[in-house]
Image 1 (cartoon, rainbow, N blue to C red):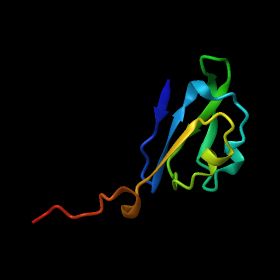
Image 2: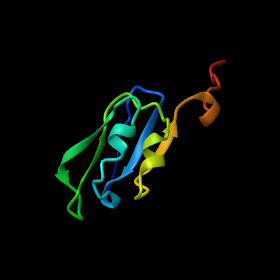
Image 3: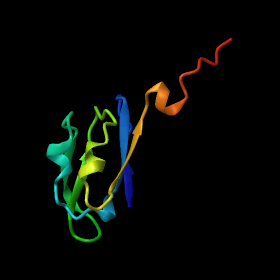
Image 4: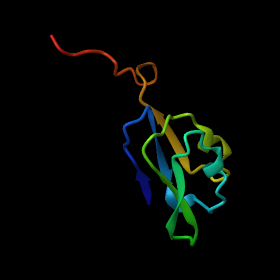
Length: 88
């Protein structure tokens, strides 16, 4: 199972919920503080992180995660290439 949250922010995180072993290293590592642990458990019996609005796409969660749970996306024009105005 994978979840994602689209928030009004400069980034987002795709979370591979069923790979998480609930270590919680990502929670204090998140500079904007938008990760929290779930109250539900994943298929292997662990609590997993949930993303709230305000992700900056900084990759801190991805860097500390020993289970490679996070895939980080940034919405800035330089990273996505979608900053062009298509209006005539």
